[in-house]
Image (cartoon, rainbow, N blue to C red; front, side, top):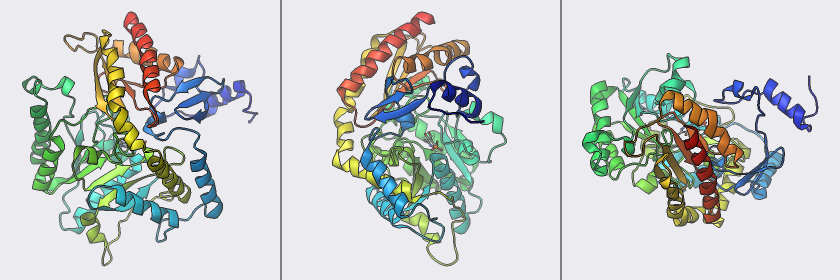
Length: 460
Ligand SMILES: Cc1ncc(COP(=O)(O)O)c(C=O)c1O
């Protein structure tokens, strides 16, 4: 049965009855309203009551240029009017060609080939499939395993989930695609005692753990290593100096592909088009999604090196993989208009000029007893919450449940700052605002978080 959703009450009822929210405990809305966001403008979004929120996580690390950009909306509408759809299976269309060329120009080194998807999970899934087929084509059919890091999130489809390092979200779906192997991440705040005081030594140890995993698994069985430039899950772990250079050496030594999963870190999040540029390493594949369109339409993909493409360039070889809506004409047109704004408004320059101020503003929160550390890079920070600053003791399961799910997630939203409160590693609050933000937005975030964290501490 349908009824008018103009009425706020009807919309609530329908949201609760018919809509299934992702990664969401639906029972949480039994006695409270589902938040309904109806429009956006710049760095702000508005709910159905007209209340304004600072978009502290760019939706979901997506809205790089901010909301309400008419030129992007118009580019999408124009394309839908001209050619709404045609597949990239055997055919091309102009906007996919133009976007592929533009992305290849922006990408580091010889990542000249673009395979589009519609999402990040599909991009990761595609990269693993490509690695497997590449090795089958080039006489190393036993290479199929992939190495990734503890707590890292790489997507929710079966293959991407097998690369993900979060046991709790994998367990209900096991057995997953075989071949996922885990190594330590670069959380220096929780580094093992023997490297706790030396960031560089910690980075070398963490990189060498990848080599040890390759040797343990059998070097000829490993296809690829999947790493984010700055790991999101766990709360923004930047790479220690030299980490990626060491990883690249290790991958080269054993003939293993290096995949830079930049679904979050690309398109300005770290002040560069690609995180690999910021940290000075050359991947064999970059996976991307989210910020490529700033969310005005869905799009993902992977950028692939000339060397990986080579066996598919002649004879009968075909990458046996495809997705109906991948590289959709409307999404491609939207992505091009989005990148135009990056250039016109020098958004990378804005992030680079302001990231230190953003960090310094968030670091003011370190005077609170609950704040253990602020870490991250660019417009991408995590604030780790602790029970005891001196010992770095974290919260137990029950406290995390009360603190994060019971209080913080709702409290930051109610206070006007939707952002991420996560305990998939240790409890963290994460911020990743639109790249147009400046000091007044940083101050607003700090102000809201200070009040909410003081209350959280009082509730422990
Ligand atoms: C690093 C990384 N890889 C892959 C994904 C999956 O992307 P999607 O949700 O678009 O499938 C995400 C999503 O947040 C991500 O952060």
